[in-house]
Amino acid sequence: MRLQGPINGPAVVCLNGGQRAAVEGTWSATLEWLVGQLAPRFPQLRFAEVRYRIKSWQKLPDCIEDARAAIRAVGAERTLLIGFSMGGAVSSVAADEPSVEGLLGLAPWFPERLSLEALAGKRLRVLHGSLDRALPGVPGVSPELSRRGFDRAVALGAHGEYTLIPGGVHGLALRAPWGRTLPLPRAARWSELAAAEVERFAG
Image 1 (tube, rainbow, N blue to C red):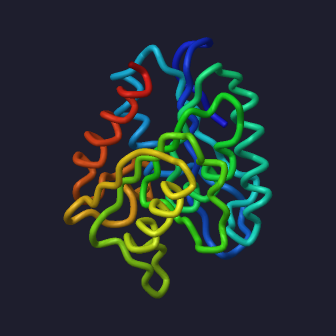
Image 2: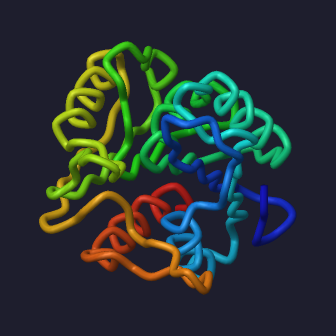
């Protein structure tokens, strides 16, 4: 986990996506780029980026365990989770941690078999790119899948909004070979909507 912001105060814990193969965790280009946009705007908030030990949906329980450990290590009285792709599934289960008030899902993966009961009574804000698709060799989550997950969560007692971003793809940024994060199409719109949700939490 890497942190920026004040030692105390509300926290935003960011949870990465994953893949089928059981590989060592990495930092998320999407979340790194987004935190770079948000942290200067909200200096009163602590931002935590989580790197799983193994980033694979085949090891989802371990990723959830990592998320819970991060939330508890941050130790904030109030926490907002940001879950990108597989991080949406991870966050939706870890949302039952006492400090968690809500989840901002960025192209979140909510598989049909996943229980969303931990989101009951919580705020759920979902943003999804309209062009997002799972293609051969290219990770992705269809907007239809996240919409069904959102509707299931609302039926269980969650509250919030779902927004489709025209022209958006899977994520906000990629990492260039030299290490820099490069924004993807419509990243500014993703950032604008994410900032509005973070402001609501901070407010």
